[in-house]
Image (cartoon, rainbow, N blue to C red; front, top):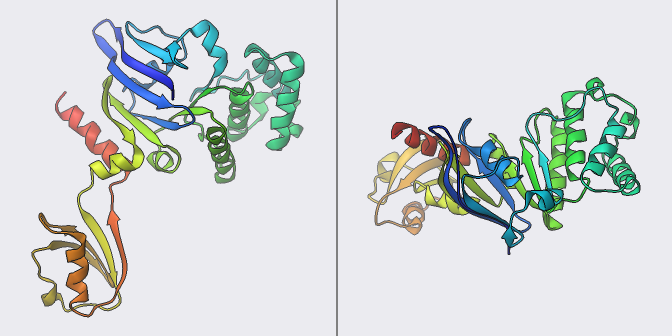
Length: 305
């Protein structure tokens, strides 16, 4: 079942089409990557999903019914890229305050804050002011403040900003755990390697329009270029490498990058080496990275703009 359904959403500012007829569904418990260059319309989309903006046209369904910002906002956690913490306020006091804004009682808020502060080893920060913390420490406080009320939908905009590798892994594991527990997550970032590692599905937008959507591996398969990497146990005679089945793109010691020619199969690549009695030690398909797909698809829209 889908937790969130966006149907033909539009948001215009004068002559600027910030969001221009975008539709997508997010299954419950999935991690959904929202991607696009600066100015693509991602922030406007997120603000409509959180009820900050109202769409000019289209519908948003939340839990199978029309989205009601006044009621449903307590089921949403939104961590914006810009830090929204009060710099002069003490960390513990602020976490309690933000939890109660989301509908928790003072007792519930204190229990939740203590649980997460213990889990993230943050108890010594309780009486520190936010401005005394590093950017990474502030990011951890903001992450905890976003999830204290157990939201059904968690929206994370550049959640790893300012975090060292150790704390980035800590937050990443929490994202996986929350998803496994049934939380639906929208993950917005410019770091494509993080998207490949974390997300189940992605949506790429530019200039307010949807460019592509789908499961990460399906998207990569769609844009594959029939490239393969083959490792061999001996260097073959280069003259014997001529074949109509594939073209050699690159050779490096005992490895080749080849492009499969039309009407040939991967078995043809393997058999070409086996017939020469050359042991094959490694064979894999080279799929494009999301970063490569992102760049080529965005550049195409820029060319035709």
